[in-house]
Image (cartoon, rainbow, N blue to C red):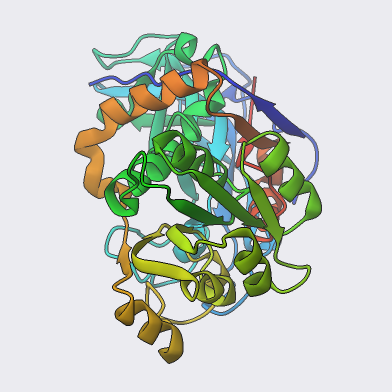
Length: 394
């Protein structure tokens, strides 16, 4: 199901299978492991039955990830929480391209830890507090974390959670995983810190992966920051149409049809000043070859290269690297986590744009924890428009 809409803001605190997942059930076990339903006994160890998704297999560094790399299983967690902990029910989970690296034994990054085989996967998530022994949270609070386990219910350290204010996004909580969260921050700070957009400078921006979670925001933000022309590159006619009709792009190129370089030359007659790069590979080579003197590449992601064994950022072909050097084109790795001191102000700016209808938000929502592997596979193959979200419970 695809959803689109506008809302606002951020809230911060001082932080396949088949069928829908069953709710957590409280069960008591005696010393022999026999089930006694929900009634407690003195000798019993109380647990909750949950569902979780673990890494079932690795695709290999050059393999293509599939839904079967993940496995849904039933498990149990303690029925009691300790001081400083909270028990949360999962509402939404995010699947993102960077997770492809976490499927490898070596992520190739010093800030990403690999998922372990038969261990629960994790990523951006949102949930509601069911029970709390942490001073900052109460039952009913909505919270988020960058390392939310892929399971229906979890017991988490309250110090690793951020409190959310649903009213700031008009109740659209999932926006905190996208436009009003780390994805929006990546687009905004990438453009500000590496794009060097200046109002009145008559700059042209090109965005690859333009219909994805980050790209769809980056093009709009480029316009809001002062670019006079924005061109997107996407993989279907539907995506290209949405970019122009809904997201305010001046034009969009379907890279699967025709010659990208020729279309860029036609649509960007004055050359390219800012390139928000989400994909790498041949598409990026074509864009960089048409960039102007002293222009800038915002190196956000390289999804076309994630199933290949190479360094990050991947080196450019010699002829493209020669152009980059001759034209003094900057192409630096961008990591949003290095700019978290600007998080609060940036989120407030994103919220304002969303509330004013200046920043349009698109989501592709898949229902059910059991479908998260399929959602990840689809996202890696370009099946999403906007942010890919998995709805776990209501």
